[in-house]
Image 1 (spheres, one colour):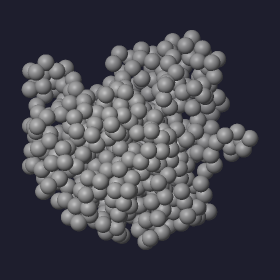
Image 2 (image 1 turned 120 degrees about the horizontal axis):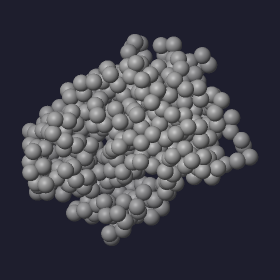
Image 3 (image 1 turned 90 degrees about the vertical axis):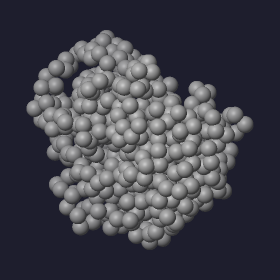
Length: 528
């Protein structure tokens, strides 16, 4: 339980339903949808699309999503892959011949097809109670009337503007007179309201065909892209099967490749070979073990995870034997150097939300355009920000994740769930680009090894072994920093907080829901 003498937030308790998101307006809209007869799927879609207006630098309809869904009266958890493919014309050979050794992050070559809208339409049709028109109505309203810019959003928006992340017409749609909006300024996106109405009326055809599709393709081709109308017309989202791993008796449920969920399972299994319970949760020993397990798990990620059709060694990553062998490589007192162990030098973020309704349908949904404002490129007419997920490919000949037409790149975004005794007890997610598998494991370990509640587990200071350094939030004591440095870690105090998180505990025995939301963001959990 939190110390009420100190700043903090309490978990949110409710019986009928809860939504936890990174923006309070989205959480409120989700609860309104639940109160209006919708279920968790309807509420998640409504909140997710609205977040594209509340946090346009993090997500939007030009992006991708992944979903885990636990529906009443179903034995198995459902996974939906809403990640788009590369255009058929993308060629690694052509890019190498042009002198590229990696795909430029802010280029049209990094723009993969948007998959989230397809996924939302499938979810609504297969699992929702309300029509798309009812579900999208709140986002349409706020896109037209506007949303006040929240403090953390303003901070990130200003950073992206300083770094020149937006170019071309995107600057007109997402900057005010060339500058980022300030806290409390109203951001409007009337053209997005117009295209959301088309989706509400026509479903996926309102986005992947007709006027909107023409706007996207014409804009991309003018920037040198190989994208065609036929690429957009192809289905992007598809159902698949979740993957599972066990950490000290609790099932960690993750989305399969091309997401990096297997990395979290491998890392958890590596850490299961160590007794953390007597360690300080923010002490040097626990932090060191976590960092070393992350290095090994992410090294495997970089070798194996790719398009679902190209990830051939998934069973090896999920194997108990693999985890046991990797655990023996960890020196409890000394940091290990693994060259090129993580592929991302710049922090990325996204939005994650979770909803549980009165019937205990649980949705774990993550939705992203990858970098801040994605590729920084937008369509001419509607201002659709194009994601740059293609930057997740590499240009290494023969690598499973080598760029190629119609392939899906390795994705950083991963939704999670916990399951105990055959029942889902918590949909959850931890945002933060490459950090996400590490974040899943830290969150799980905080609860399992140290007995703390979900809100406290989210609040606890974070660390991340990334690009040869160990990044720490400011919550780490200077003495702990010195101890870690003596172990061989190169310590960097991160300028911005590491990621964000949301979770809902389902207490089946007492019939209650307990929501948790990360104070690193502007959002909250709201229940009724």
